[in-house]
Length: 173
View 1 (cartoon, rainbow, N blue to C red):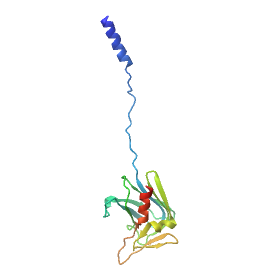
View 2: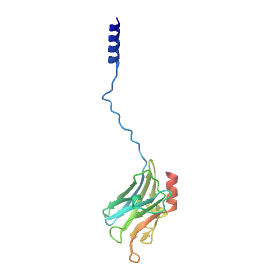
View 3: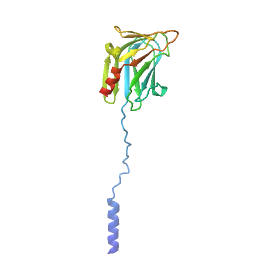
View 4: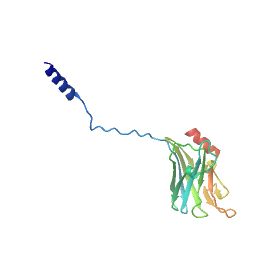
């Protein structure tokens, strides 16, 4: 009797065991929030644009804190997309374009900023309110055209973010 009971117990235990050998566990991937600056513009000449950014507590611009986009000159609008790959919300932005032709002309159309699911748009007539050109750029506020120029033998055109842009970034994101 003991043997019959043990055999029944063993058969019941083995037959009732439920295995999911085919079930594969997928790794959980966390979606990170990225800061993205997208500029829709007409850029006359081939060039390389770099977006430099400062993080909280940082005061010096470094190559590590930059994103570079190569652009082919065209009379048609094109998008420059700068994505900061870390979960970083910048405290200052600098857009530089000095690698290609001197006397580069850029007509700004629309600028988008996004972080995660939040975003806002800067229309072309508001671009100058959010970005300030340095002395190497002449900015036509009526036609929204930036023309890079040489000053004193130097050529270092860039736009810096105004305080109002950084305030809007922290408010919106």
